[in-house]
Length: 185
Image (cartoon, rainbow, N blue to C red; front, side, top):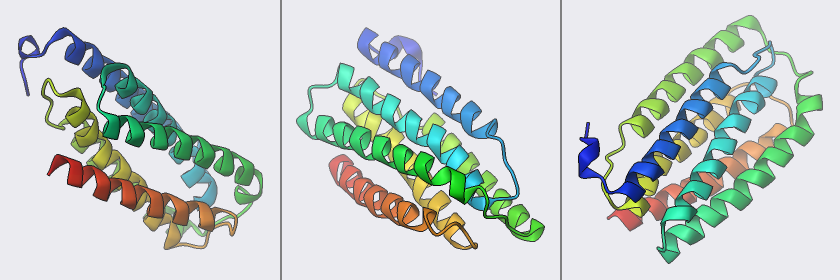
């Protein structure tokens, strides 16, 4: 871990807000009301995940003048808001899609593993006084988590309305991951 005294005041403010958003996301995903529907479970856990991405993007926009990061953050805000709207629209029909207990158990176990990895990687992302780079290092595992969660859900019988939403998450977030990795390189 890094000593707080090595960060300038803007970085300290940025990181304090980031960790608060991360904690809210962890709580929101962990407190989601899970049922016997993988489709419903995915939606109620992905909405707080997406909300966190929006808040993290809004946070970095307050602290960076990096045009590429501004474009990435703005795109994340737009895409995640649309995805939340799509998931909320699908929720009513999707929560009726029940799954067998064995599938629920396997799905939840893998979700637990994915979320644990994502939380750990985000929480331990290397922080420096370059806020734009910090955002990228935090957002890559966030996006990887969304891709893994979506792929996990696609292994099971899910609501047909949810399938294009998952495919859209996978496509857009994989593209974002590649773009952000290139920036760091």
